[in-house]
Length: 255
Image (cartoon, rainbow, N blue to C red):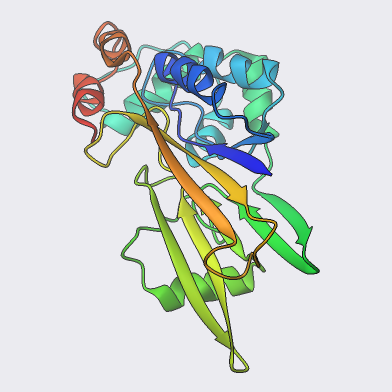
């Protein structure tokens, strides 16, 4: 079983199109999107429509939730008094069709997958920020005990998330009544707005090893895949809009 996970597209259509081209080579069995379809670029409707057309199971990101719940207006956006985040939200709010707004409003908060291999029941939890809240950041330097506690509370053996745009995989050794097992915490990175000083988009393919316990460090293979896309097309679209030019520079610099 091979599962593709991607997140944080942020209205970057050139990046999403390049992702779809790349994923066709990967022979995956299922695909899930962990949210933040919109914000920071000029193609929110096109992104949503591609996700819907392909029937990709998707959860809400914090930008999806915030913008989806805004009331549409056509008032002039005063870039002199709003911060960059507010400009992005107002700009996206004005572009968004009502049908696509309803789609964002009705996205689930998380997706739980349950697998049974070799007499083991494995819970995979897909969230945007964390199991606690949609906008909580889980960085790689987060203490191990905090992540394990979070996963125990949410009954997750494998926790997959985005939001920080910085990919990593932590294999967490857990001792229970003298028995050692492993949990996996996986930040899947960002398709359309990477922030790890790498300008390439990022996503993850999970592959389960049917011949090994999923609760040991050999049972799950986590492959981080980086792909090129037309950064200049995405950056120029920002510069030709009222969005702050710093969004374009961030794409060019990977931050």
